[in-house]
Length: 91
Picture 1 (cartoon, rainbow, N blue to C red):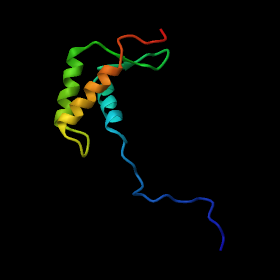
Picture 2: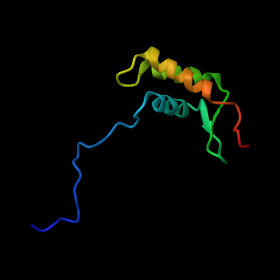
Picture 3: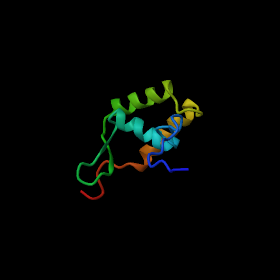
Picture 4: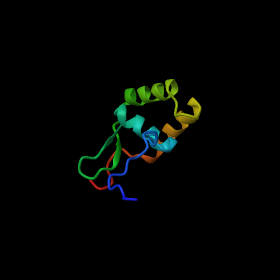
């Protein structure tokens, strides 16, 4: 039996965009521009925009992470906020 050098992957092998609630929450914060990335070092930095944080909280309340409650999603945002500073540690 000859081997086929071009293996085909199954079409239904797609995985979710985010694997964890924390990763999803960070993605929401970056989408809403509440958290930005340092252009020089790549660290996440609080953008100091209260409206962006309010938009992020409203977004996770309307569209929670699959399998999580809106309250758990808000708690994940707050946990991310505690771990992000106002300045890049390397700048």
